[in-house]
Image (cartoon, rainbow, N blue to C red; front, side, top):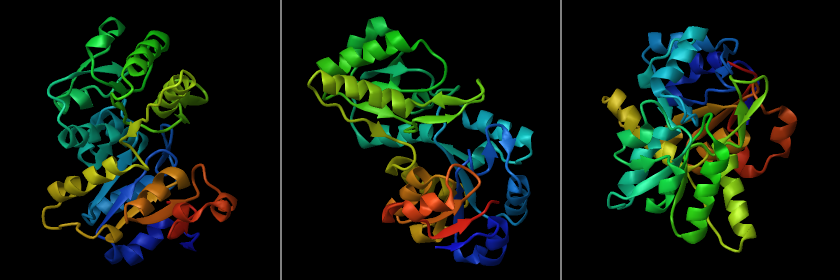
Length: 288
């Protein structure tokens, strides 16, 4: 582990050591809707030298265009083709299994336009139709939680073999709607699983976002489509930059990707010193 300077200074002198950069968003480039110091200048630099990069976000409630729009309005000049959401991994997930056109019960929002509909997955949000469904998709945003949670609980209690798919594993996140923290889709899914466990059955969520594999599996072909002159075949030459040990750093390490921690978000040096080996970053920086 090395660093403690600014990431932008590092990448300007060591950029050739990597083929692409994957950035976390919240806590790394921005805090809510406010850009963090140096983030806009760094992205402008990467654009000017045509350096391959993606923004990886667990936010599956907002479309890629809306996420990019929030950032651009705040002074971070990104376009939607540089944003990859955990919601995009629904297409990867659908390709892995044969669901025979079955319908899924969707809790909350999963993008507008919908990530799941773009992936060809049939859904309903109507609790009255839950027993027509062959699984549950846990979304985000503002929705009527109680009937949705009860419907999902009853379906999965009756059929614990059905999949519970969660795009965003996060328990909480900085809310733009209230002055404080919002409850994440991961927390809702784990609550449902705990109630089912209390009733004597087991359901295990399948997560698409960081630190889990699906979003990283999507990142490589996404990069290849955007930069066809490169193959991005060596994950160790991809650098993940984020502020969370359990999400960004652990996810990168588990997928063979180089990892860099920035101390601009939720992690301190003291937390790094106490973290297990799988959460130890290769590099550490004070900020962008």
